[in-house]
Length: 241
Image (tube, rainbow, N blue to C red; front, side, top):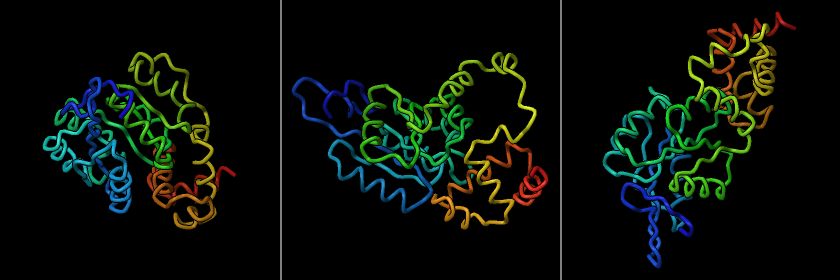
């Protein structure tokens, strides 16, 4: 792996002068079996990487990390039981030298901020191509960060959230008077389709995105608007027309 200077738990990322390239040890954590297996196959086809373990939830990920001692952990944020962001402290304890790279469908600024605050070295969307993913893994081993291009516009706010803490929150401008202003353009689009009565599957087909992505957007919409169900969201959107 040319140009890589950092060292992983096993020195797998280390490169001495003239030394043979040693593959980066990767742990893949994702609860969707097809995606996880597909990602594992993609990495296995690249001699620069070696998938040393897989996990489908946070508990299994922590055990696998302690056993396999990977250089890099690819971590989905939306896992059953415990979210990936909430699993970060346990993973860092299990494999202190591993670098954690979030690989998720969430474009939410709060998720980005929480991941960076929790110690993740990067944040990639699952729409990333194989070249960007490979580069992000190599950068992670070198101690560098990577954020998907779609998320770079949210980096300033995320960084302020990470650095500012309570002081930044106290000094921040007042929240928008209209809760709808807290929604991203995509979330507003999905809210309108919810109000129209569309199901998640219909929304996914309409917007040409995955149904799991729709579900995550719906969760964010409900949280931001302080609602507990999509029915309430539909009523809310209808009333605001």
